[in-house]
Length: 111
Image 1 (cartoon, helix red, strand yellow):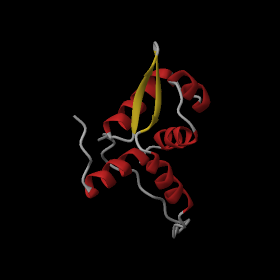
Image 2: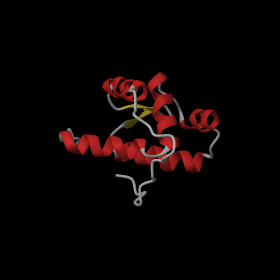
Image 3: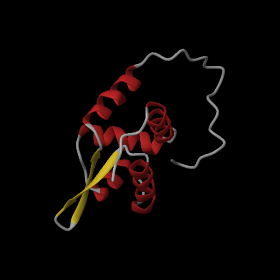
Image 4: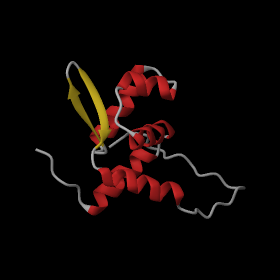
């Protein structure tokens, strides 16, 4: 049974999902429209195996859902509000010092 995440848990899961550029690109692609894995892999230029791992992470984080369509599976954002959240984050003005980099997280495990 699915249950809503708490405020902090939702932010942590969203942050973990956004911590990887491929997952960011996947979320933006799914924001535009639901898609099948083969189409997503081709659009992103990555292998289906690599795509599958990232989709599993996004599913585990609760951001995307797999929808059976006949013998195939289509992926879409778990909630339309996620598309709005992505837009808000994407268009936010960040205070960035170009002389400094944003360090990668030491722990790359997902959700």
